[in-house]
Length: 274
Image (cartoon, rainbow, N blue to C red; front, side, top):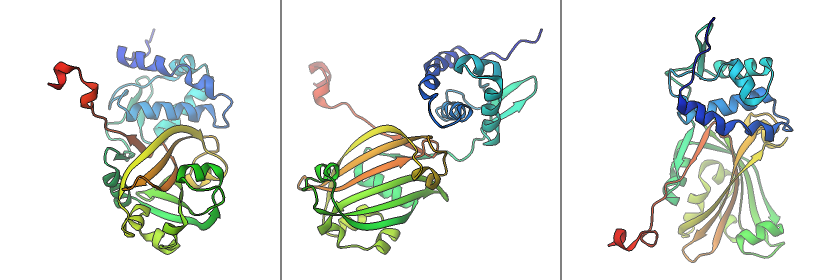
């Protein structure tokens, strides 16, 4: 009797972490097979399944995620079609030694450097450029009054010709009046702000997970209801005033959000700090 390919202990333990994920997402409009594809691809990219290793077979996927064999097969076929794995009859499904283009990864431990690298490695297209009355939630972030005029821009940013982020930015009118839509098409927003003599010194980031809506989904080339990484940023000048508020949505398969953290002296014991 043929035995099924076995996964190592590390892989089995990591699989248990994902067992409940699809139970939460079953009401999503994203097909279950594509959700499984996204999970397996994420585990390939984070090296849970390293090159040449086996990923779960159809029967194992059925058990892990409580889905039909057809769903499991479609997930593995999609993974193979995207060139992450090779399927061999009787041998299982193995991770390719050479993976497709890795997602963009911008370290965020330095504010200006991270924005510079983003502008250097990617391209942005301005979809909307207008002046609006600030809604209350934007006014709070920019420390202005509800109804004050702010400049709003909507952009789609691409990496190697493929869209990966949808960006909505807001800046105070006094700053936005000093550049045009054409300027923003050619130059990153932070550089347009700094050219006005404003020094950007720090930022507050909040990270969440959302589902792609009917507006964003086609622009990023994903299905409606697909998971996206939401990163909201407030950027401050040298006087502590908020000068930019950005609401960014990222495709998680094309962008990795990486933060480097260090332990401060306050976090050390007296012996460690001496």
